[in-house]
Image (cartoon, rainbow, N blue to C red; front, side, top):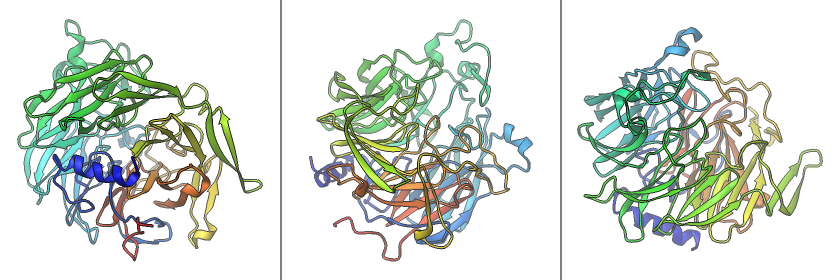
Amino acid sequence: MSLQLMTLSIGVMFSAWTPLVANENWHQPAGPNGNWSVDGTPPIQWSVTRNENIRWRTPLPEAGQSGVAIWGERVFVTTHVPIKSLDEKEAVTDILGFCLDANTGEILWKVTLPGTAFISLAGGFTDGTVFAPITDGEHVWFFNRCGSMGCYDMSGKTIWLREWKPRFKHNNRQAEPFLVGDAILYVEVANKVEGAKVQKWKAPGVKSKGTAAPMGVDEKEVWTYLHGIDKRTGKVLWRENVGTVVHNTPVVGLTADGKLAVSHARGGPHAPFEKPKGHSLTSLAPGEEGKTLWSTNLRNYDPSFASHWNEKYVFGFRGGRHVVLDASSGKLLRDQPLYKNATVWTFDPDTETWGRKTNVSVKAGKGHPNTNQANIVVGDWHWFLSHNVHYVGRVHVETGAVEYLEVPAQLMPSRESREQDVRLWGAGNPKNRPLNAAGFAVGDKGHNGTGWGHISAASPTRVGHYLFFPVVTGTVYVIDARVDSLTPDALVAINDLGPGGETWTLAPLTYAKNRFYAHTMREIICIETEDRGASTEE
């Protein structure tokens, strides 16, 4: 199927459950179509460092890592409550939910969501703020991974607040919520009381003894599952019954017979309770919410990714391999290595020349898979960031062809002009030290790296035929997804979200009305070109 036909079918497919105007709103973490993909005319080039194509920038009082939700003239985002010293960093559980004016960036109101279990503050994998808000134009829901979610009207008045102590085992930025009808899909422990007793990490990187279920408690009671939460009351409506690991991002879509369902998975590192490892499809159809349509066991499955799918296939990764399942039955159709017989374009910075190799082996690093969490399906291609090597990769979902393109490890933007930008190849800036608003280097794991390798990663965003891959340094790679072959010509721009070495973000770019919205550790940014975006009809 061509990219244009795929784009059209996506819009038709999701119109049944998300009656939104394309390019008008980005109402939840995965966007209006539930797959981080929209039509539109996006900005292609910008620089926060030089204030190029930036409509506004609003400083925020503390680090936050959520994406941005947009509805009409309102923008929503979350941060931690401010700290006054680094000594406070290890105890922050409360977060702030903000509403801003979409045209000016003015902060209109804010609310506080309490937390009960410290997770992290601006960590390389997670913190209390990593889930983007959800809004339906009448209400907004903020999520604190430290143990609460709240519903507010558009003036900031509290409608309800739901609190619990989360199971603190190994948390990731994945498992973001979805709004489906009147239900918010949210991954949490089944038994909130007993789940709160399960510990693996006393603090980030500090393991505690024992990870078993409490004495006398069925282990399945402390598994994490997809729950349907009533958006109007905060009450649990239903939960699925096969388990969902917190490393995974469930993805909502429609089956071949037009019924709502959600793709989700179990597995990954740190001995998750939910087992056996594998992938599942669960019904969201009225009257069948939470019913298992199928569940396929997959050894060595590591679902640290968004579980993309369409009416024909479900896609995944395990180790350095790509997995394709039949969307109707869950049958494993293909399981192939991503590091054999690949086509690779690499750059030699000494000679400033490109080289192409075919049928080669590509290893992303000893002991690690070839893939990072960042992935997205566009047409017949499943795109991803590689792990330790700075490659954008893609695999053809029908033929299994694998292509890689090397990209710079990091952009060091000039304050003078784009022509003076420095692209670092092979390794990033050795002194990356992103700071929060108060000037504290509050991040932990991966804080001074390039965002590749053993660290969480934001989802890429597709607007029109362009893919936007942000990494933690504020470097954003822009890829033309129409290309027949993944050559250097596919890399159409590299942009920045702030000065190199000083910028940090785990948030994806969100898009509405020809603008991008970005959230870094220090501010929220509205990106808009003077001509209101680049044409996608080229």
